Amino acid sequence: MSIYRSLKDIVYDYISEQISSGKLKPNESISEADIVAALEISRTPVREALMQLSSEGYIEHIPRRGFFTHALTLERVRHIYEIIGNLESLAAVLALENPERLDVDAMRRLANEMEQAIVTRQYEPYHDLQYQFHNVFIQASENEDLIRIIANLKKILMSHEYLSRTRADDDRVVFDQMNAEHWHIVALIEAGDKEALRTFLRDEHWNVKYAAFYTYV
Image (cartoon, rainbow, N blue to C red; front, side, top):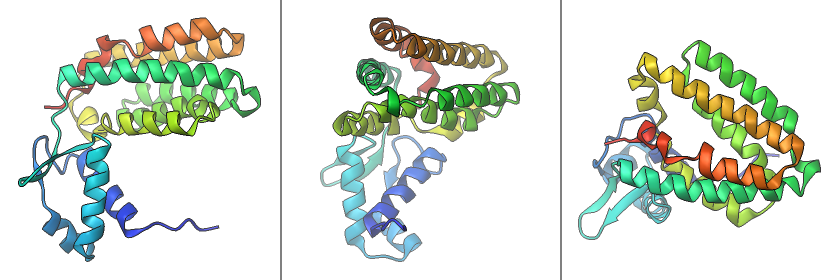
């Protein structure tokens, strides 16, 4: 069955891709006229998509000046990490209460694929796989509002291309550490240890020590 996508959805995805690919730089003005011309559509869905992205914190709306991409400063990433850590820990605990919805085999497969991506220095696919890994237990929480809020926060950290473009060789150590933590998350889920899982996700996996990895200024 095909899923209907409105013009607003198409514009939303287009702008998101422009930001995540690096075509739109930090603090850059987003031209409504350019989007209208590029997609050959009216201004209304463009404005609707921009307003939605702004309400989600993905871009900034300055009255009488227009819409702008955000600079992802270290302070802001730290704040986002703290929030996501608390929300994901809640999602994981809720997921443990829905074991029939929690596909641990998929999490193992994704952790293995992330290992291969690290070995071959395919860091952009790594970030996509990491998103899928976390989404397994987030979706299993079956809390639609929680799922939506986490997804919106993560959009702010989605500038994948600049990550793959600027990674130094020493950063492989960080990727290895993060994926070791993914395996530990799997182990805690298999053990059914709610409190340890909650603490590990909140205090270790989403520790602000990783925040500089996502800074985009």
